[in-house]
Image (cartoon, rainbow, N blue to C red; front, top):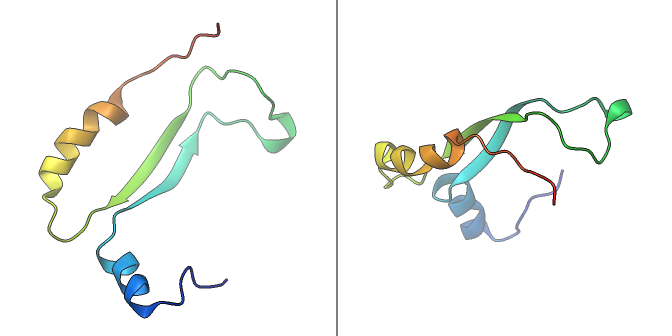
Length: 77
């Protein structure tokens, strides 16, 4: 695997100060052999969010939680 940058400062910032959102789990996705361009009844993700050191975690969670907890249904047409 290659580094994302050759600049040491950018590498340090990416590891310590920049936020990161990672998908650590997913549910409701079909197996590759059954995958297709279709609507699924549900999809759920487990996410991990790394915040910069000076960001208040409780405040960030309060602002993001409504976005992630909303059950959205996409209707064709």
